Structures are given as structure tokens and as C-alpha cells.
Image 1 (cartoon, rainbow, N blue to C red):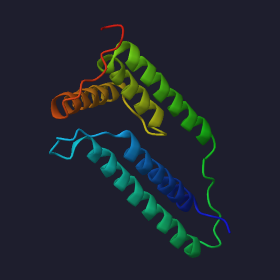
Image 2 (cartoon, rainbow, N blue to C red):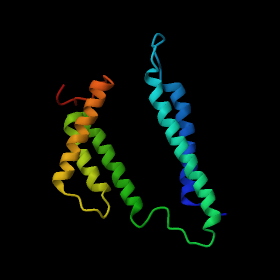
Image 3 (tube, helix red, strand yellow):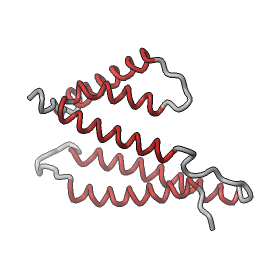
Image 4 (cartoon, rainbow, N blue to C red):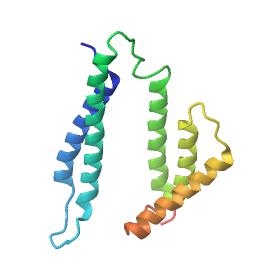
Length: 160
């Protein structure tokens, strides 16, 4: 019995969601006198979205297995896919290190620009458009966290 890609992704997502839910219970602390939902709400919302999406993928994978019984399925990772995922992961690690040294406002536009070019696939992306999108995303995230959530973002150890 060979499983479809959607079913495998759904099972991995549901397993990850369950582990995430368990970790939320032990790692997120909430002050006793807090009246609003507080810091525990966002992880639960994220857990719910990932779990529902994974469940729907699992159901679709099971349903399409019977429907597409004789068809040959594409490989889970197309040619070069593992390399692309590994490269994106390394870029994310480099972004995290850069954020620790130079802060959010200097590292995020460059990271967004690099991610846009990394994830573009066969699409043509103009550098000016990518730069404008990177700046808009950076300042949008900054405004959301600093003014909306009132959370300070890393300034970087070089600028403290």
C-alpha cells in the first residue's frame, strides 16, 4: 500500500501539531492576573490552523488514492528539491544569526530579498519590485510587532 504525497504531508503535519500542542502546554507561561487571552492564544490559533490543514491534506490523499489508482505519482521532491529545501533552511539560519548581530531592521530586508529570489522558481522577478516588497514586508512586520503587539524586536549586539 503506497501512500500519496498529500497523505504523508498530512500525517507529518498532524504529528507535528500534536507535539507542538504538548510543548505549548509546558513552555508558555501566562501571568495570573491577565484578563485578555494573553501569550497562549497565538500558539493555539497556529496549532489549530496547521492541524486542520494537515487533516484536510490527509483526507484528500486518501480520497485521491482510490481515484488515481493506476496513475504514476510524481516524486515527493522533484529533481533538486532536497537541495532547494536545504538551501532555504541554511538561509533561514543565516538570517537568524544576522538578526542577532545587526538587528531586525538591517537583516530583514536582505533576507526577504534573498527569499524572494530563492522561492521564485521559474518566474521572472524584477530587482526593484523585490526590493520594494522586501522593504514593505520589513516595515509592516516592524509596525505589527512594535506598535500592534508592543514587542521589541532585536536591535543586534553591534548596535546595543
